[in-house]
Amino acid sequence: MIRQKSSQFMALKIQSELEQPSELQREPQEDLSSVDGSVTRMVTGVRTESRTAASIEADEDPAANLFPPPLPQPRICMWKYLDIHSMHRLEKTANTEEMREVLAELLGLSYPEQSLRDAITLDLFSHALLFCRQHGFSLEQTSTVCALLQDLHKACVATPLGNVEECYRYFTSVLFCHGVKRPPFSINLFREEQLLALADYVVNTYFRHFKLYKYVFTPQVRLDLSLTYVGLQPPKLWQEDETGQVSILQAYIRTQMNKELRQLQQLMEERLQASEERLSSKLTTLEQPFQLPSGKGKNKTK
Image (cartoon, rainbow, N blue to C red; front, side, top):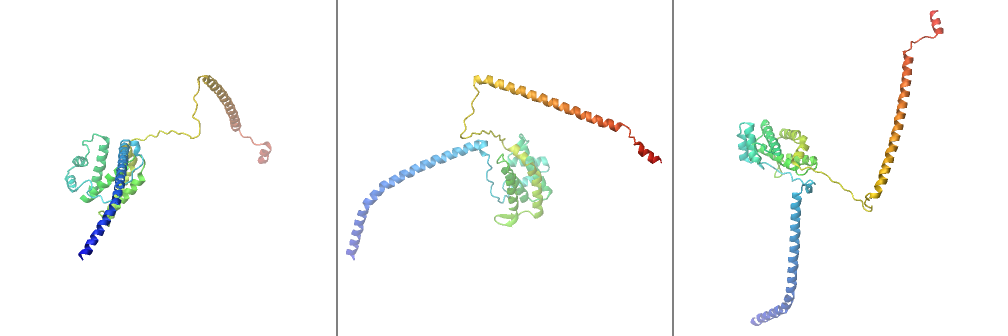
């Protein structure tokens, strides 16, 4: 048994010695592969840096974000922006001015309003809170309404181009996420009549003024269009010796146009005079008294 184990050990030792040159041959290949890997990492690092720089430039340039970004997935948005403590603070307010002051503090807006955008945003959410109070919404429902309006407004001002249809589809999908019990995708937070009232309110207050919100909160877009035709020669500029010929041609065209206009004016005057003469002759015939023929009058007397 000892001899068999020693023979097996010697065989394994010889096999390991035979495999050592192959491992030595693998080492340069591994070194080359590591060099290639470091080069590829450097290239990818440069690419990612260039992409991040390009993305920063695109964010800084408002004209680079003309295409509307994809809208977020509709999800449950209860307590998303206004938590339970914020809703308790808003509920304790006694009047509208105090509510606007607390709401501006919670939303990070300036109060009193120093900019037009802050004033419009504050009016949007304050009227939404008044709507929720009038319809007896709970704190959870009121927080959801404010979050829904906030996400809708973000989708509206994400691009200066028109995306009213996409925003309306997003609004209805988010609305249904809070009207059907299908956890974890949706909950039955609102009743059917509350959903209808909320949909009518948002359509009549936000979507009817959709272009106004987009005009105030998005940069102005101006299109500078230049066309280049492939295969055509660029237009030649007029030389100094050709300017005299151009002026002569313009003078000739001007004289011919004036001549044609005078002829047309004379023709129109003649036609107007002829029509006046015909009209006057007809009026004179109508003004003359109507006389019956003599033969017909005699027959009637008999």
